[in-house]
Image 1: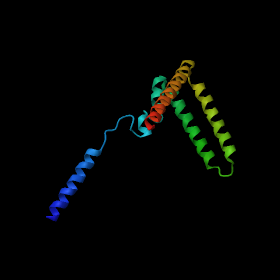
Image 2: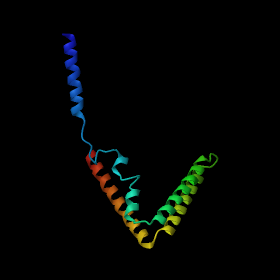
Image 3: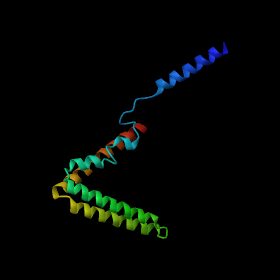
Image 4: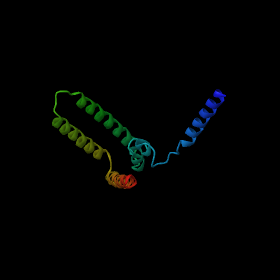
Length: 133
């Protein structure tokens, strides 16, 4: 009798746990799963219609910047202010190199896409804030 009662109790708990799972939609997905690729950059690169040469140049530039950032983070003897200044300089260098690789039309398109992405993010954040209230 006790075994039967314990088994029925376990069955009730397991079945209720199965029904408690909720379906994942865009709103309740983890933050990184909402974007296509890493931070939506894949979508942006597709929209820019990059040539193979541009893609290889951007990939090489990305690898170079990644190595520079890693070397900067490995430095233990610099202050936070110096670190921020060097990171800002690397970011400016990266933007300059990217602008040199892209055409004028691609730079314009990228600026529009960034503006659109910021607006979507702002809207999503506003919806989230109103839900919390």
